[in-house]
Image 1 (cartoon, one colour):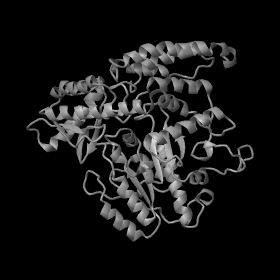
Image 2: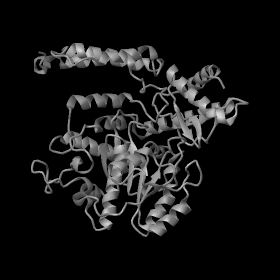
Image 3: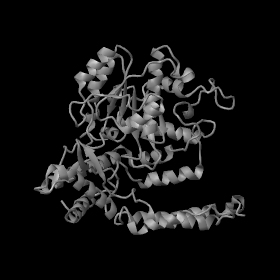
Image 4: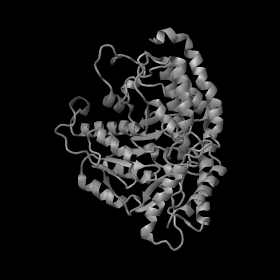
Length: 475
């Protein structure tokens, strides 16, 4: 038997195995493939029956480090463009290691004043960074989906209250469907949040002017006037195919005019506030009732890291608190207890890497990173437009370029299949990672530039790999 108590003296040595591997691994990310097909078979080494006695701390850690550094999808490197996924800056990585070392639970102040204070400070800094009022309530969440869940749970509580129901205590029974209106840009994470809240994934009414998804404000206003009842509007800051934005200020006007709750899904687009070049895209965001963002995107901190901001902090407490459990803090506790402000009870101290990153790089460092990515996206757009066999499908508005392979003479009805095969070839090749989407009925690539270490050379390599692979495709 290998009892962990017998190996407690090995904890530091085990961590040093990871630390020793970290330097070479991180240095290799600039040149190694994002996906190494030759190493994929190593993943099978994770399997097998559960050991009866166990291999011991050092053997198991060495095995995991060996397999992981070889066979992982190297998404923390500079050429992972497939989803809107950032890497981990050096300060954030160190902060995350400290998170595991200290193993704090910031759900209740009494469990960890340190982690609770770090979360409060980090959330305050994020509000400053995004131009949100200091008075907004806020909480860290595991992801954008849980951040949307938090904001929309507060919206649900507000909406039910207008029907004379405390949904926290009594649930949804007897209530009509909650009206939710958005543009065609509404993201699956918002819909999943509605699904988990019992409101229905497919109940969102979308008002779009065309098949791009751009909002039809006139149609939305007519619908609000016809409802003559409390409703929730979801505005989208950063659409995943093109990086486009809903007109948040105009949607805030509608919300005020018709007494609706305005929720802004700014998973990555919220970071446009950091640069004077793009801050106008978020005009009106401070007027929203709830706003969310995602730290493992443009903040470049590790998973898990979302954040939700709510104008009325008391609404968060009413939606998530008041558990009436004698061993938990009660109504007389004046401390800030984050377990009462969001969906989690026990929770990881995810504020440490956020605090470390914001403290290390400040407003100027994060602005420089965002503006570098804006420049790189424009560079990619220019390279696409200069290539005779590539077609830019939408203007480059933020950090995403949406385009497709369109060789001369190939008919439209064959292009979707051709681009699907190009996307599969890119992922299999592994030098860069950029899969496909469907935009306005067209299969396309939509590389998202969000990693702190991406450079012009990585953008140029993406185009080169596409040019290497396209001759192997049969038009």
